[in-house]
Image (cartoon, rainbow, N blue to C red; front, side, top):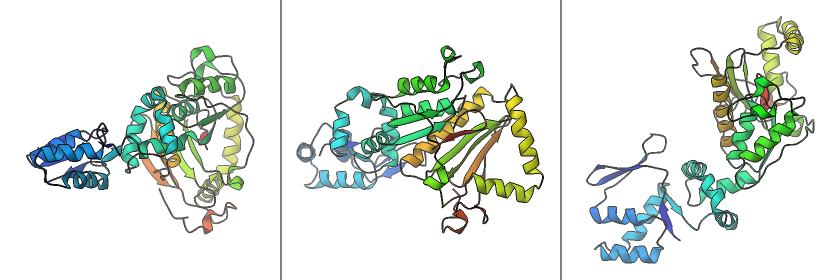
Length: 351
Protein backbone atom coordinates (compact mmCIF):
# COMPACT_ATOMS: atom_id res chain seq x y z
CA UNK A 1 0.00 0.00 0.00
CA UNK A 2 1.25 3.45 -0.99
CA UNK A 3 -1.29 5.79 0.60
CA UNK A 4 -1.89 9.25 -0.82
CA UNK A 5 -4.06 12.09 0.42
CA UNK A 6 -6.46 12.84 -2.44
CA UNK A 7 -5.10 15.85 -4.34
CA UNK A 8 -8.55 16.89 -5.61
CA UNK A 9 -9.37 18.62 -2.30
CA UNK A 10 -7.55 21.84 -1.41
CA UNK A 11 -6.11 21.90 2.10
CA UNK A 12 -6.11 24.76 4.62
CA UNK A 13 -5.57 25.09 8.37
CA UNK A 14 -8.58 26.43 10.23
CA UNK A 15 -6.42 26.93 13.31
CA UNK A 16 -3.22 25.47 14.78
CA UNK A 17 -4.79 22.05 15.36
CA UNK A 18 -7.52 21.72 12.73
CA UNK A 19 -7.08 21.14 9.00
CA UNK A 20 -9.87 21.33 6.44
CA UNK A 21 -9.78 19.34 3.21
CA UNK A 22 -11.95 20.87 0.51
CA UNK A 23 -13.51 24.26 -0.16
CA UNK A 24 -17.08 23.45 -1.17
CA UNK A 25 -19.57 22.13 1.41
CA UNK A 26 -20.48 19.12 -0.74
CA UNK A 27 -17.12 17.43 -0.17
CA UNK A 28 -15.27 19.36 2.57
CA UNK A 29 -13.97 17.41 5.59
CA UNK A 30 -12.59 18.88 8.81
CA UNK A 31 -9.80 16.84 10.43
CA UNK A 32 -8.43 17.34 13.93
CA UNK A 33 -7.03 17.77 16.45
CA UNK A 34 -3.70 17.57 14.64
CA UNK A 35 -0.36 18.39 16.25
CA UNK A 36 2.56 19.78 14.26
CA UNK A 37 4.30 16.42 13.80
CA UNK A 38 1.10 14.75 12.60
CA UNK A 39 0.55 17.63 10.16
CA UNK A 40 4.01 17.02 8.76
CA UNK A 41 3.24 13.30 8.47
CA UNK A 42 0.07 14.07 6.52
CA UNK A 43 2.15 16.11 4.09
CA UNK A 44 4.26 13.01 3.45
CA UNK A 45 1.29 10.75 2.66
CA UNK A 46 1.67 11.52 -1.04
CA UNK A 47 1.81 8.08 -2.69
CA UNK A 48 5.63 7.89 -2.77
CA UNK A 49 6.02 6.04 0.53
CA UNK A 50 4.82 2.66 1.69
CA UNK A 51 3.54 2.07 5.21
CA UNK A 52 6.89 0.85 6.55
CA UNK A 53 8.60 4.08 5.54
CA UNK A 54 5.74 6.19 6.90
CA UNK A 55 5.98 4.36 10.24
CA UNK A 56 9.71 4.96 10.35
CA UNK A 57 9.33 8.65 9.54
CA UNK A 58 6.54 9.02 12.11
CA UNK A 59 8.84 7.47 14.72
CA UNK A 60 11.63 9.85 13.72
CA UNK A 61 9.26 12.78 14.35
CA UNK A 62 8.64 11.57 17.86
CA UNK A 63 5.13 10.26 17.19
CA UNK A 64 4.05 7.20 19.22
CA UNK A 65 3.98 3.71 17.74
CA UNK A 66 0.84 3.09 15.72
CA UNK A 67 0.24 6.78 15.00
CA UNK A 68 1.01 6.44 11.28
CA UNK A 69 -1.47 3.58 10.93
CA UNK A 70 -4.07 5.49 12.94
CA UNK A 71 -3.75 8.58 10.73
CA UNK A 72 -3.99 6.51 7.55
CA UNK A 73 -7.08 4.67 8.85
CA UNK A 74 -8.75 7.92 9.87
CA UNK A 75 -8.04 9.58 6.52
CA UNK A 76 -9.35 6.51 4.69
CA UNK A 77 -12.50 6.46 6.81
CA UNK A 78 -13.13 10.10 5.93
CA UNK A 79 -12.80 9.35 2.20
CA UNK A 80 -9.63 11.42 1.97
CA UNK A 81 -7.16 8.68 1.09
CA UNK A 82 -6.13 7.15 -2.17
CA UNK A 83 -3.66 4.37 -2.87
CA UNK A 84 -1.23 4.46 -5.76
CA UNK A 85 -1.58 0.66 -6.15
CA UNK A 86 -5.33 0.20 -5.54
CA UNK A 87 -8.17 -0.44 -7.97
CA UNK A 88 -7.50 -3.99 -9.11
CA UNK A 89 -5.75 -5.43 -12.18
CA UNK A 90 -7.68 -3.36 -14.74
CA UNK A 91 -6.87 -0.15 -12.91
CA UNK A 92 -3.26 -1.20 -12.76
CA UNK A 93 -3.31 -1.88 -16.50
CA UNK A 94 -4.72 1.60 -17.08
CA UNK A 95 -1.82 3.06 -15.10
CA UNK A 96 0.38 1.57 -17.82
CA UNK A 97 -1.03 4.19 -20.21
CA UNK A 98 0.17 7.42 -18.60
CA UNK A 99 -0.97 9.66 -21.45
CA UNK A 100 -4.54 8.41 -21.09
CA UNK A 101 -4.42 8.79 -17.31
CA UNK A 102 -3.04 12.31 -17.66
CA UNK A 103 -5.73 13.25 -20.16
CA UNK A 104 -8.39 11.96 -17.77
CA UNK A 105 -6.77 13.60 -14.74
CA UNK A 106 -9.62 16.05 -13.97
CA UNK A 107 -12.20 13.27 -14.42
CA UNK A 108 -10.22 11.04 -12.08
CA UNK A 109 -10.16 13.87 -9.56
CA UNK A 110 -13.94 14.14 -9.66
CA UNK A 111 -14.39 10.38 -9.41
CA UNK A 112 -12.11 10.32 -6.37
CA UNK A 113 -14.65 12.53 -4.59
CA UNK A 114 -17.62 10.39 -5.60
CA UNK A 115 -15.96 7.01 -5.00
CA UNK A 116 -14.46 7.51 -1.57
CA UNK A 117 -12.55 4.25 -1.31
CA UNK A 118 -8.86 4.13 -2.35
CA UNK A 119 -8.55 3.41 -6.06
CA UNK A 120 -12.19 4.31 -6.65
CA UNK A 121 -11.27 6.91 -9.27
CA UNK A 122 -9.50 4.44 -11.55
CA UNK A 123 -12.14 1.78 -10.93
CA UNK A 124 -14.70 4.36 -12.05
CA UNK A 125 -12.85 5.07 -15.29
CA UNK A 126 -12.37 1.35 -15.94
CA UNK A 127 -16.13 0.88 -15.49
CA UNK A 128 -16.88 3.73 -17.90
CA UNK A 129 -14.64 2.18 -20.54
CA UNK A 130 -16.81 -0.97 -20.50
CA UNK A 131 -20.04 0.98 -21.14
CA UNK A 132 -21.89 1.49 -24.41
CA UNK A 133 -23.98 4.63 -24.88
CA UNK A 134 -26.08 5.76 -27.81
CA UNK A 135 -26.88 9.39 -28.56
CA UNK A 136 -29.71 9.97 -30.99
CA UNK A 137 -29.12 13.09 -33.04
CA UNK A 138 -26.01 15.13 -33.80
CA UNK A 139 -27.15 18.75 -33.68
CA UNK A 140 -25.87 21.47 -31.39
CA UNK A 141 -26.84 19.49 -28.31
CA UNK A 142 -26.41 15.84 -29.29
CA UNK A 143 -22.96 16.12 -30.87
CA UNK A 144 -21.56 17.93 -27.84
CA UNK A 145 -23.07 15.34 -25.48
CA UNK A 146 -21.42 12.56 -27.50
CA UNK A 147 -18.06 14.34 -27.48
CA UNK A 148 -18.20 14.92 -23.71
CA UNK A 149 -19.12 11.32 -22.95
CA UNK A 150 -16.34 10.00 -25.16
CA UNK A 151 -13.85 12.48 -23.72
CA UNK A 152 -14.84 11.46 -20.18
CA UNK A 153 -13.82 7.88 -20.84
CA UNK A 154 -17.04 6.12 -21.91
CA UNK A 155 -15.74 3.20 -23.93
CA UNK A 156 -18.24 3.09 -26.77
CA UNK A 157 -20.29 6.09 -27.85
CA UNK A 158 -22.55 5.61 -30.86
CA UNK A 159 -24.20 8.60 -32.52
CA UNK A 160 -27.34 7.81 -34.47
CA UNK A 161 -28.53 10.27 -37.09
CA UNK A 162 -29.34 10.53 -40.78
CA UNK A 163 -28.96 13.11 -43.50
CA UNK A 164 -26.21 15.65 -43.98
CA UNK A 165 -24.67 18.16 -41.60
CA UNK A 166 -26.12 21.64 -42.00
CA UNK A 167 -24.40 24.93 -41.16
CA UNK A 168 -26.71 25.41 -38.15
CA UNK A 169 -25.43 22.14 -36.63
CA UNK A 170 -21.93 23.53 -36.18
CA UNK A 171 -21.04 24.34 -32.57
CA UNK A 172 -17.90 24.68 -30.42
CA UNK A 173 -17.15 21.26 -28.96
CA UNK A 174 -19.45 19.65 -31.51
CA UNK A 175 -19.44 19.34 -35.28
CA UNK A 176 -16.94 21.64 -37.00
CA UNK A 177 -17.42 23.73 -40.17
CA UNK A 178 -15.59 21.11 -42.20
CA UNK A 179 -18.43 18.69 -41.49
CA UNK A 180 -21.04 20.72 -43.38
CA UNK A 181 -22.44 18.70 -46.25
CA UNK A 182 -21.06 15.41 -44.95
CA UNK A 183 -23.19 12.57 -43.52
CA UNK A 184 -24.19 13.28 -39.93
CA UNK A 185 -23.33 9.81 -38.57
CA UNK A 186 -19.91 9.87 -40.23
CA UNK A 187 -19.07 13.35 -38.93
CA UNK A 188 -20.29 12.56 -35.43
CA UNK A 189 -18.27 9.35 -35.43
CA UNK A 190 -15.14 11.28 -36.28
CA UNK A 191 -15.88 13.77 -33.49
CA UNK A 192 -16.29 10.93 -30.99
CA UNK A 193 -13.00 9.31 -32.02
CA UNK A 194 -11.13 12.61 -31.79
CA UNK A 195 -12.61 13.29 -28.34
CA UNK A 196 -11.81 9.90 -26.83
CA UNK A 197 -8.66 9.55 -24.71
CA UNK A 198 -6.55 6.51 -25.47
CA UNK A 199 -9.20 4.36 -27.07
CA UNK A 200 -11.52 5.16 -29.95
CA UNK A 201 -15.25 4.67 -29.41
CA UNK A 202 -17.23 4.44 -32.60
CA UNK A 203 -20.44 5.63 -34.13
CA UNK A 204 -23.08 3.11 -35.10
CA UNK A 205 -26.29 2.39 -36.90
CA UNK A 206 -29.66 2.70 -35.17
CA UNK A 207 -30.86 -0.75 -34.18
CA UNK A 208 -34.39 0.60 -33.71
CA UNK A 209 -34.79 -0.91 -30.27
CA UNK A 210 -37.81 -0.06 -28.16
CA UNK A 211 -36.19 1.45 -25.08
CA UNK A 212 -39.04 0.64 -22.72
CA UNK A 213 -39.59 -2.92 -23.97
CA UNK A 214 -35.83 -3.54 -23.92
CA UNK A 215 -35.42 -2.06 -20.44
CA UNK A 216 -32.86 0.50 -21.66
CA UNK A 217 -32.45 3.56 -19.40
CA UNK A 218 -32.55 6.78 -21.40
CA UNK A 219 -32.28 10.52 -20.84
CA UNK A 220 -34.04 13.25 -22.81
CA UNK A 221 -32.29 16.54 -23.52
CA UNK A 222 -32.58 19.38 -26.00
CA UNK A 223 -33.54 22.96 -26.73
CA UNK A 224 -36.99 23.96 -27.94
CA UNK A 225 -37.93 27.57 -28.70
CA UNK A 226 -35.28 29.06 -26.44
CA UNK A 227 -36.01 26.66 -23.57
CA UNK A 228 -33.42 24.15 -22.45
CA UNK A 229 -34.69 20.75 -21.32
CA UNK A 230 -32.82 18.03 -19.45
CA UNK A 231 -34.70 14.96 -18.29
CA UNK A 232 -36.37 12.91 -17.39
CA UNK A 233 -33.96 10.08 -16.96
CA UNK A 234 -36.24 7.12 -17.58
CA UNK A 235 -35.68 3.83 -15.80
CA UNK A 236 -38.06 1.53 -17.69
CA UNK A 237 -40.72 0.03 -15.47
CA UNK A 238 -39.68 2.18 -12.50
CA UNK A 239 -40.02 5.83 -13.54
CA UNK A 240 -42.23 7.75 -15.96
CA UNK A 241 -41.57 7.35 -19.66
CA UNK A 242 -42.40 9.51 -22.70
CA UNK A 243 -45.77 7.79 -22.92
CA UNK A 244 -46.53 8.82 -19.34
CA UNK A 245 -45.67 12.42 -20.15
CA UNK A 246 -47.87 12.35 -23.24
CA UNK A 247 -50.87 10.95 -21.37
CA UNK A 248 -50.44 13.40 -18.52
CA UNK A 249 -50.37 16.33 -20.96
CA UNK A 250 -53.52 15.11 -22.69
CA UNK A 251 -55.27 14.83 -19.30
CA UNK A 252 -54.46 18.48 -18.65
CA UNK A 253 -55.09 19.76 -22.19
CA UNK A 254 -57.54 17.92 -24.43
CA UNK A 255 -56.40 19.97 -27.46
CA UNK A 256 -52.81 18.83 -27.09
CA UNK A 257 -52.92 15.85 -29.53
CA UNK A 258 -54.44 18.05 -32.23
CA UNK A 259 -51.80 20.74 -31.81
CA UNK A 260 -49.01 18.19 -31.61
CA UNK A 261 -49.91 16.80 -35.03
CA UNK A 262 -49.82 20.32 -36.47
CA UNK A 263 -46.49 21.17 -34.84
CA UNK A 264 -44.87 17.98 -36.05
CA UNK A 265 -46.05 18.66 -39.59
CA UNK A 266 -44.85 22.26 -39.42
CA UNK A 267 -41.49 21.18 -38.01
CA UNK A 268 -40.72 19.27 -41.18
CA UNK A 269 -41.28 22.45 -43.18
CA UNK A 270 -39.64 24.95 -40.80
CA UNK A 271 -36.12 26.03 -41.71
CA UNK A 272 -35.07 27.76 -38.49
CA UNK A 273 -34.85 26.74 -34.84
CA UNK A 274 -34.40 28.86 -31.70
CA UNK A 275 -31.36 27.13 -30.25
CA UNK A 276 -29.00 29.68 -28.72
CA UNK A 277 -25.38 28.47 -28.60
CA UNK A 278 -24.90 29.33 -24.96
CA UNK A 279 -28.09 27.55 -23.97
CA UNK A 280 -27.46 24.51 -26.17
CA UNK A 281 -23.96 24.15 -24.72
CA UNK A 282 -25.30 24.44 -21.17
CA UNK A 283 -27.95 21.80 -21.88
CA UNK A 284 -25.38 19.47 -23.43
CA UNK A 285 -23.06 19.88 -20.46
CA UNK A 286 -25.79 19.32 -17.88
CA UNK A 287 -27.17 16.32 -19.75
CA UNK A 288 -23.73 14.76 -20.13
CA UNK A 289 -23.00 15.30 -16.42
CA UNK A 290 -26.31 13.67 -15.45
CA UNK A 291 -25.60 10.80 -17.83
CA UNK A 292 -22.15 10.25 -16.37
CA UNK A 293 -23.54 10.32 -12.83
CA UNK A 294 -25.96 7.56 -13.80
CA UNK A 295 -23.28 5.56 -15.59
CA UNK A 296 -21.13 5.88 -12.47
CA UNK A 297 -23.86 4.26 -10.39
CA UNK A 298 -25.74 7.27 -9.00
CA UNK A 299 -29.25 8.63 -9.63
CA UNK A 300 -28.94 12.23 -10.86
CA UNK A 301 -31.51 14.94 -10.21
CA UNK A 302 -33.10 14.32 -13.61
CA UNK A 303 -34.35 10.90 -12.50
CA UNK A 304 -38.15 11.12 -12.86
CA UNK A 305 -37.82 14.89 -13.25
CA UNK A 306 -37.38 17.48 -15.98
CA UNK A 307 -35.07 20.46 -15.62
CA UNK A 308 -35.92 23.54 -17.68
CA UNK A 309 -34.36 26.96 -18.23
CA UNK A 310 -35.73 29.56 -20.65
CA UNK A 311 -34.07 32.57 -22.20
CA UNK A 312 -33.34 35.24 -21.17
CA UNK A 313 -33.35 34.72 -17.37
CA UNK A 314 -32.19 31.08 -17.47
CA UNK A 315 -33.48 30.06 -14.06
CA UNK A 316 -33.17 26.28 -13.89
CA UNK A 317 -36.32 24.76 -12.45
CA UNK A 318 -37.16 21.13 -11.75
CA UNK A 319 -40.58 19.58 -12.31
CA UNK A 320 -41.39 16.02 -11.16
CA UNK A 321 -42.52 13.68 -13.94
CA UNK A 322 -44.94 11.17 -12.38
CA UNK A 323 -45.85 7.83 -13.98
CA UNK A 324 -49.27 7.66 -15.60
CA UNK A 325 -51.55 4.87 -14.35
CA UNK A 326 -52.81 4.14 -17.89
CA UNK A 327 -49.38 3.90 -19.52
CA UNK A 328 -48.39 0.33 -20.47
CA UNK A 329 -44.78 0.95 -19.39
CA UNK A 330 -45.68 -0.35 -15.92
CA UNK A 331 -44.07 2.47 -13.94
CA UNK A 332 -47.43 3.38 -12.41
CA UNK A 333 -47.42 0.16 -10.41
CA UNK A 334 -43.74 0.27 -9.44
CA UNK A 335 -42.73 0.82 -5.80
CA UNK A 336 -40.31 3.44 -7.15
CA UNK A 337 -43.06 5.26 -9.04
CA UNK A 338 -43.16 8.29 -6.75
CA UNK A 339 -39.38 8.78 -6.74
CA UNK A 340 -38.32 12.18 -7.95
CA UNK A 341 -35.12 12.67 -8.52
CA UNK A 342 -29.73 13.37 -27.18
CA UNK A 343 -29.72 14.64 -30.97
CA UNK A 344 -30.96 17.62 -32.83
CA UNK A 345 -32.37 20.64 -31.06
CA UNK A 346 -35.52 19.86 -29.12
CA UNK A 347 -35.22 16.10 -29.32
CA UNK A 348 -31.77 15.13 -28.09
CA UNK A 349 -31.66 11.82 -26.26
CA UNK A 350 -28.98 9.70 -24.67
CA UNK A 351 -29.36 6.08 -23.69
